Length: 470
Ligand code: MLC
Ligand code: AMP
Image (cartoon, rainbow, N blue to C red; front, side, top):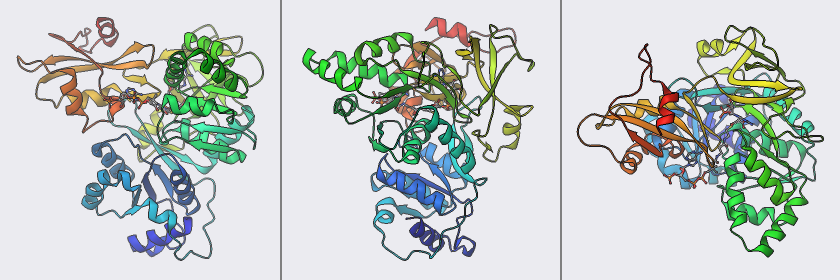
């Protein structure tokens, strides 16, 4: 397929420099998790391109932002998703290829594929942060390889493993920890187009899986699903999951209650680990040995970690400090944002913005330095991005978005708003209005109308006070 991609790109772009090598050209693709995703990602890499997986839940406006920001030269889409992309590609003069055609194309192949040195860019993943628009996180082949080698060793991946990927494939958790580690190990990876409690229990209960990884919200849902079943079925499912070798949780804090309940149901103490799009995985509880509830373990092999105060001075173990990371698995840069890249490092250490303490070498995450970052269902969401969109709503004079603690989602998106007139917008109406601009997981699910937003003496909204009011 890499050969067909090269041939098609050359034909579509008319650029002879790309005859034998995509030369880090960005190829964006929108396909459901499955065989076509795997084939495309590897074809883009083998052809020397940079893979830009698009989010299947994104509305046209967000997809357009990624096409613009990456300066993609080519877009590939499954026919079920092409509708959203056709007008965008037409407007940008971008070739849009049907994934199904490429997969079945038996056309001419080039006689050789390019030599892709591992320092070259491989992938751009978009992540929200403390700026209003998401940033493109660039990974090289070397960074990806370092991540995968570390994880396959630390978690004991084997070629007879069989896992089920239920996570979206535009984020590191699904792409690297599950899919790429499985393929690197020669293991089997089944892919579900979308998480579904019943479908996952069906596979967990089959006795054919050895390994499973998910975000805490998914374990919460699976627990509810198991509890709703008849006693005999519960017993069968519990017995099947007990035979699996490993279950991992990450991307957000795993509530101790969820860990304990999952252990009661399956006999597994979830292995909790900590990571980030920019650094891959950094901290992990052990495969063998005690897994501490409410903690994320110790640094993975090859990962260096220090914790510092606001001035960058190292702090004692029992003092809260921001986690800074160094190592071969880190990202290379924020795409075309040298200033943001430079600002995210201090003396060669990447500043995560997450605060932790250490007890006997084991790290415990206390929270984040910024109140403007929300984690809901494992997705990182920028409060500033949502506020910027909502301020365009005609009935909103001002607003502030916060994360509200929630047992299922970790945090829910809440918006406090000051009305522009006498009419108060309804939550449903606001969600419908915003749906064209923002991914559904970013839409507020709590609304509070206030006369004015609480502010400190500097005029900055005091978000912690606002969370209390919800
Ligand atoms: C879906 N919704 C969300 C949401 N996911 N709202 C808030 N937060 C979320 N995370 C919305 C849906 O759009 C829908 O809106 C409504 O909530 C109910 O949808 P659902 O069908 O019940 O939810 P579902 O689509 O099943 O999604 C739940 C989920 C999903 C947990 C499966 O959120 C998910 O896949 N999360 C994983 C994200 C992930 O991979 N993060 C890793 C980032 S990398 P409506 O209005 O349409 O009804 C990273 C680094 C690391 O963090 O360490 O791993
Ligand atoms: P993302 O930018 O989507 O990759 O999300 C990375 C962020 O997820 C980190 O900076 C943490 O805030 C959070 N995170 C990941 N794993 C954990 C964990 N096990 N416990 C707490 N927070 C986590």
